[in-house]
Image (cartoon, rainbow, N blue to C red; front, side, top):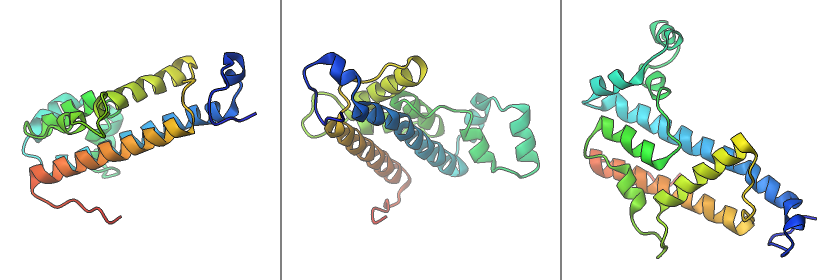
Length: 178
């Protein structure tokens, strides 16, 4: 039977379909997170001054070079596919390749709602949990609906903070009426 909170009996909680469905959502949430930062990286790369440094680190495959040559994919999108954008730590490193003063990790490390754990650490843990679920089948037995809502709120807040940090760095006002 699907319950919205722990029963106190571990064996019963292991069979809770709500926990399974909530854990199944995490890989999709992380995939959307990753795609947002990959697309943002491609957009910033298009106008970045330090493209050469990014190209050196990209390690394009033969197939990717062919796609660029026949204009199947934009260069920036193809290059962004060479980088990982799951973990906030890696996202921060990748964007600093584009501009030393663009510190997205710092935007996620700022305090949020008087919590002891920053958004940065919260999302790092979320990605760890996603990897444990996808690669080892380990479910987060505490991922009930309230916790899932908190995860979604944290992701939205982190994305908004990064978007504003990019806007501040490059001098544009982020759109917020979408």
